[in-house]
Each structure stands twice: as C-alpha cells, then as structure tokens.
Length: 367
Image (tube, rainbow, N blue to C red; front, side, top):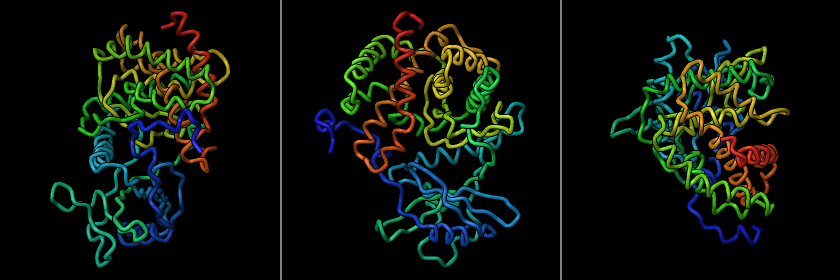
C-alpha cells in the first residue's frame, strides 16, 4: 500500500520508471544470437533495471551485450544510443579518447526464415542496427540491439583518493570533448533524470518518509527554480552522458583510472557542468570532506575542458539536484515495486546523508 502522502500523486512520470523489463528467457536470447550473430554461442544473463541484458560470447572469447529493450523506450531514444556509439567509435583514434562499447549490427543474412525475428524498420527502410523479436507473452515485438562487451573491473572498485577523483573528472571531460560534436533530437526529451528538470520530483516528495528531509528538499527546490534555473540557461550546453555512476564506469586494475564508460541511455542536452556534478555526486559519499572530492573532480575535468567562473559557481547546485533525484525517485519507485525495494533503495541512505551535509554548506553560502 502507498502511504497517504503518496497515494494521491498522479504526476506525469517517465514510463521507463514504471514499465517492467520485457519477459525474455535465456533460450530466447540464445535463439536470437544463433540466428542474428553467428559464431556467438555462449549466453549468460546480465543484470539490468530497465532492459533484459545478456552476454553472448564466441569460443575465442569475444563477447557482445545483447539488449532486449524496455517497451517504454522510444525508437528515437534507441536511434540516439546507436548513433552515439558510432560517433564515439569514429572519435576513438584521437588522443585522450575514452573507451566505449562499439555498436554491432546483426548479420547481413539475418534473420533468415525465423518468423519471430525481423530487421528494424527505420525511416521506411530495413536496418540491422536493431531488430524486432516477437514475444507471445506480451502479444507484440520487443526491440533489441547488440554492442561490444567491455571487460574491466566494476566502478565500485575505484579507490578513494585525489588521483582517482581527478581521473573521474578527466574522463568526464574527455567524453564531453568527444560528445561536443554530437547532436540528436532525442536528447532534448522531457526526462526525469535530467538535473535541470529536478523540480519535476516535487509531486514525489510524499514518498520521502522523514518530514525534515521533505522540508529541506522543498526549500532547495524553491531556490533552484527561482535562482539556479535562470542562471543555467546561459551556460555552455551540449549532449552529456548524464549518469557517470560507478555502475556505468569500468576501472583499471589499480583502481585509480577509468578503463571504459557504459550505458548511454540517460543522455540529455544539458549544461556541461551537469556531467561533473553527477559524476562527483557518486564519489562524494566516501568518508571525509566531500567538497575536496568535488574539487578534485572539477580539476580533472578542467585539465581537458576549462570552465568559466559562472559554470564553477553552479556545480554544487547541480550536485544537490542529482542527490535530490536519488532520494525522491527511488523512494517513489520503491512504494510501487515493494518486491524490488531493497535494490531500488540501495543508495538512497548515502545520497540522503550527503545531501544533508552539503545542504548546510550550501545554505551558508558555499555556492
């Protein structure tokens, strides 16, 4: 049951937050791999919150990620994620390029005689950049695509120290430098995880149990709408990754450098400082001085892309915006998916503690 405070919330919500992953079985993925990606024979299920993901491998060890896409993702969003991987692959020869998965189209002869698999239809023409797989359980097709599987240590293995934080910022700067020439209409969508749209979480605050926390978040949103949003409009903007969390980065064996960046599904057109703020917000939960962590991440970013004084002034504002999202959105989702509540709320406590600590600094004029 929803709490009384949350029960009346009928706010417009991004469908990806409430739509379950498609009901794809291991044998379905094996079938698609066999027909559309010849030579990839081994198949293992991977974790995923929105989509159903599988790792398919050849005998020589080469692997792909096979992604069966959530039905709430628009075709334009799928096109954007394919397009950005192609864009980054074209940039990969340049110095300082970050490592990202390569896009893998289906075999030119696929799907052959399989009646449940069809090439994608893009602008009236068949394409093998993505495929359509008919799933009887839902009475319709599921879109799917494949991209290179990057090996590496999970981002949670990143060491906590100035060198590692500088490396995170530097990688964010390198990625934004590569994305500066990339444009796509889907990045301008209405998206709840866009920090510039953080005020959209107001109707979700009823799901935050602590009255004091709700009041602090509401006070922050008042200032954000009145003061921060107008200032953000004049800052340099571009398409950004928008989710450089530990789950979306790979680190080197030493745990001090980035070995790859994953999952471009949250990309938005936003102030470029949002990239710094989001990446830093996940590193700043370590014990110690969170503003020192932020300073190291900013310095790493500026080693690639210098910031203006106006941009620096608003980085902390956007750190707080992402923390508000990490508190309010999971709280709201956990009420609707109680069976998965532990997973959904896995980082809310850390985000709440950091928000409370930074809010005091921010309120005293640290901005």
